Image (cartoon, rainbow, N blue to C red; front, side):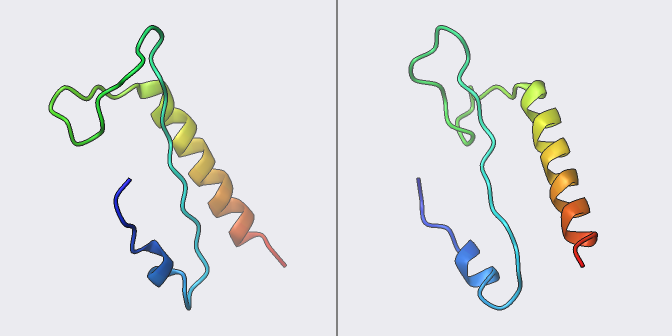
Length: 63
């Protein structure tokens, strides 16, 4: 994995970072997200969207 600058973003402002991914059945070496043969699994997008929604709701309702 390459370098991430996210640590600089959350130095002064609270934040979170997570990676969503999946491994297709029968595949041992999947293509990375910048490869032209990369395929998106839309089920992962649903999980990521729900997770981001939960994070936002939890953050907004903290007292």
